[in-house]
Image 1 (cartoon, helix red, strand yellow):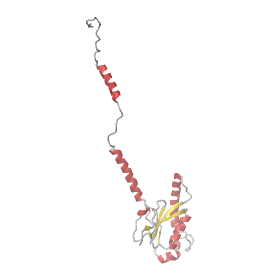
Image 2 (spheres, rainbow, N blue to C red; image 1 turned 120 degrees about the vertical axis):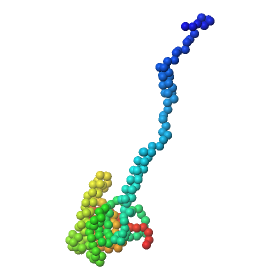
Image 3 (cartoon, one colour; image 1 turned 120 degrees about the horizontal axis):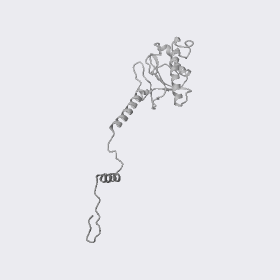
Image 4 (cartoon, rainbow, N blue to C red; image 1 turned 135 degrees about the vertical axis):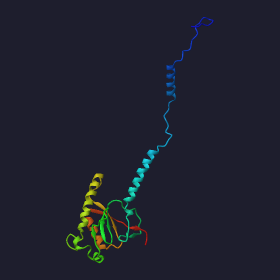
Length: 203
């Protein structure tokens, strides 16, 4: 130990060691620590989100009732009223030659005599009790399956299952008698609400 001229002992600074250096470095890091900032864009998550949105949009367009194809056998009538097309309900197509239901292109009923359709409706072989009856048996059989499926879906969603909905897509030249028979059969099959599909605009 060294002494000064007055005889007092001089203080010697502590010798720096590796352990002390590391401890001081850790303390400095803790003092200067801060929350990390996100300065980048997660492209993967963004692409996943866009893919989900795209699939949803395409699904909505493919199931839209406004996208029903028209041809020489089925021309939807024109209306001067504009409204959003209905999205709820089973689709019943009434063309010039047949009746089909849902996504199935196979006809439920086929016909050709337009004069008979205007007078007595469909042929007696499709009716429940003769040519004057309004109940179309083949159509009712198909509608019953759709009704049961719709009832289960409504009950699962907590909605009222007392009745179902139908979207009528009829050719503009459909005789009133045939249209009335279809509507009657729908009512007998527990379809209590109908939407008639038309085109907007004037001829």
